[in-house]
Length: 344
Image (cartoon, rainbow, N blue to C red; front, side):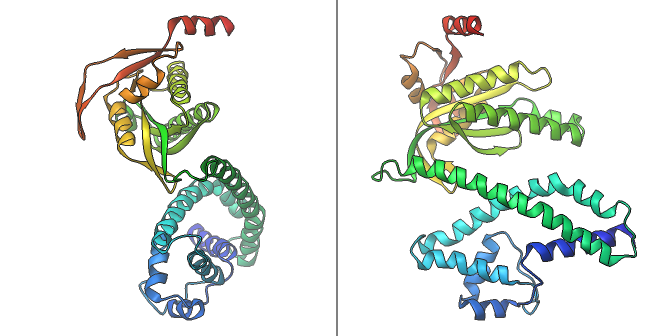
């Protein structure tokens, strides 16, 4: 049996294990059994990132699919979420899980391939199916448990911040928002092999995430060569920016960074941040010189009396969306830097 056919058998067996059994329902079956209108079923299915089969009579849905639709609509029926939030939540969940599974499969893909194909008799389909089931039984529960643990940890931390004051509007918060991106990334992509580019991005994300977490910040998202982060205080955000610059300046094999940080009210929606503060931080980042950090006026004023930081006013910038953006550069105070060097 050709290797691509072996892969098809393995894929079918793993899908059967993951999807809660063999598909046995059509779209109409799902509508009838769930009591959910067809239009709503299709809308939620698409929002979660799954393609709708072109044949309405195709048997492609499992009991797990039926349960999932009942669960998300059940949240609406129990008034846990508003009806107008249902599709947005399904979409955010789908996008998040899609990215997570891309990473997970990338990690275990070679392991699956080696375990199934190494020494396998291409004609022994039963043995191939048994191996595929064994791999799924060993790997999936571990990933699922780790995923659940990490989610609960993050949920506890986020809930603690959000409900500390019940009077606060949880979607509107005052935060420092920052971006850090690698200078010259586009030209690097033309010169580096895929393996080298993978190593570069992994190193960037690993170092940046570590510094942001140690600085009491939160990674909002990674987009290729750029990381977006937030912090509860201007001081924490300033330290994160400085530590990011120090870390990457010390790495000869890494490009320089540009960092921009702004402070103010933001809209927190489904794990992302929105508003003029976010746009301002992005504009500052794109305007910064390599190896520098730019702050907006509000962030600068919040740090003005802190002797740890050296702040220098620059000429106003004319950038899209802002008539005149008054940036300031951020550096460590030389006396503080000398003191830190002695301590080290």
